[in-house]
Image (cartoon, rainbow, N blue to C red):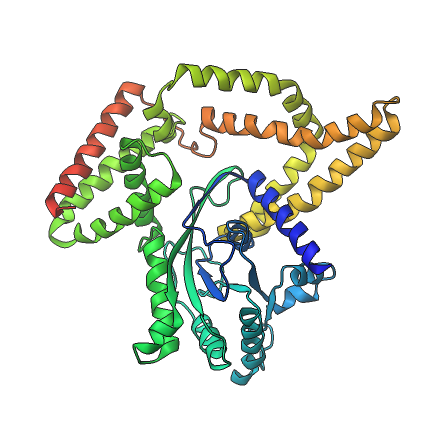
Length: 432
């Protein structure tokens, strides 16, 4: 029964992820047959992070879940269906001693020995930092504990999670699986095995995600990577991530004696993006222009065909769509949990509202239109999604807020050329 419930749960999670994100890119996903592996991911987007990792691959993954979640009626059943492992943290039980983790380690060992895989977020908390924070030793201690209990063939793998706008509905996400590491091979090298696993996991995580010492620095790296990715014709989040990691490495060489050149790049890139914000455009839109006229015509035709359903959906679901927007207030400025609130509220409000509309349709619609009408009600919110994406594409939703006169397109292109010129001179200077 629990196995069937797990399948239903993961199927549901996949639909939620597909609706919430405009696109999810997955790189180097493990095969369905993978067993006895610990996955360690960075943690910047609350409950969205485990959902992304668990739905990015078909192998069995048991997430670790903090103890308070198991006390919530209904949720504990879902956690059991997901084969989650309960974790009692020090803040959950202030009197918790060091030895109280032994049961957790035994539970993880049993999961791994059974052929399951375990998902952990080794940073310990969901956070708002522009870089991977200091890793805790829990992942290493779990693997060493399982090894000491005789579990064979243990491996671990870092998982990098990237978002273009993590708190925004219909943004993009990237799930990037790193190299597979063998616990036995690290043990053969000698030394403290827990420390070796922790350090390797941290090194792999920092290699997978784009980081900055500050948010301003991280934003500059992201913008330079976007410019270079679009210049090469690659508009995927994976392409941005790959270039961004090289830009991050090059940025370190621009400080010190290359400081003036760094400042020039910063000024040129910032000036260009300020102009884009004023014009409510993205770099992708400016570069693409009108694009392939045939593809544009087909997209417009598809949108027009969807328009009647989209309008009906926008009207009937206007109220429930407003409720998840309260998540910004509920999160109280903590952007790492905005998506958690949006998804949580959406999972309650939208099914309930859809069920109510479907019931009213069944009762009020004349025979034999009740059942088809109720089914159509469930499809209406999905018809709105392409139009939401189109509105975002045309209006640059979320990129505005700069109340200045927008520069003409020719000026934006000149600013872009100046930014790229400064970037390329910096690359030539440091040999990047």
